[in-house]
Image 1 (cartoon, rainbow, N blue to C red):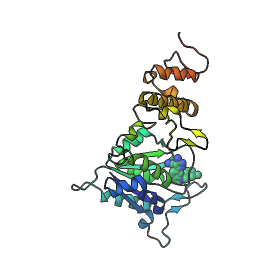
Image 2 (cartoon, rainbow, N blue to C red; image 1 turned 90 degrees about the vertical axis):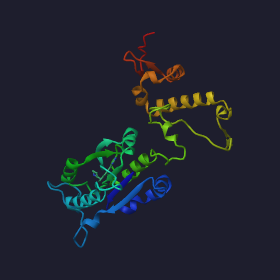
Image 3 (cartoon, rainbow, N blue to C red; image 1 turned 135 degrees about the horizontal axis):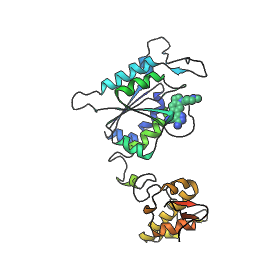
Image 4 (cartoon, rainbow, N blue to C red; image 1 turned 180 degrees about the horizontal axis):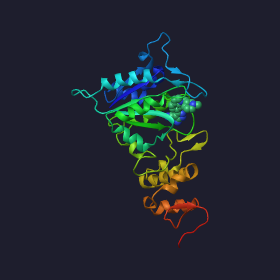
Length: 276
Ligand code: JE8
């Protein structure tokens, strides 16, 4: 996979040199290229912003530098010989974007080439998004319902979420299959608690089941803990689960936590309207 990032703060993306993403780059599994937007300015001050038409607070990023930068980056990977990465997907981080989810991370991890355009100020002149959305696939994505000062941190989040899904990037090839939000055993549930040595720390013991060596009991305990944590922190995930995904013991645990199967076939909490 090739990833290009156009930004006025390339140094903000330094974390892409370390840890999991850094190792994937060193192993040639990931080709990450950072581009300083100011390289495509032509005035003495390398101006990238200007006042908003219609007035209002803050500044808006000018279309010209973005247009020249995107043209240059897209041309550098355009169709042409065995090295070309194929069709790009342009990703625009924005608080008004589609929520970035594990499902979208999975989608992006299957693409050969991602081009991220993290902005600053009040964002990029809309005509840039309109222009490139006509020529390429373009996704406006948000990492959460809070407002940051720019798109670089969202790029770090999205690149890490995508890179860990690439073959050979995570140590244990299957470990992401047990992710909270990935399809599979814990599909749609949050991670349960984890423990390691020492067996006793400041008077606190590790749950006995985890040192029992009984794999069936351990798996059951972990699933119950995931149900408990999800029920507490993200009850809407329980309500959204297909009840067929819950086995008999799951249902017992959920009922202990106050959940009931509703007439709509979904688990809910509140007055029991279960058909006995
Ligand atoms: C950004 C962002 C994501 C998220 C992403 C890119 C570019 C007051 N204004 C601040 C409001 C509009 C955005 C301005 C800051 N900004 C924020 C994000 C994001 N992805 N989940 N929260 N914030 C930019 C400029």
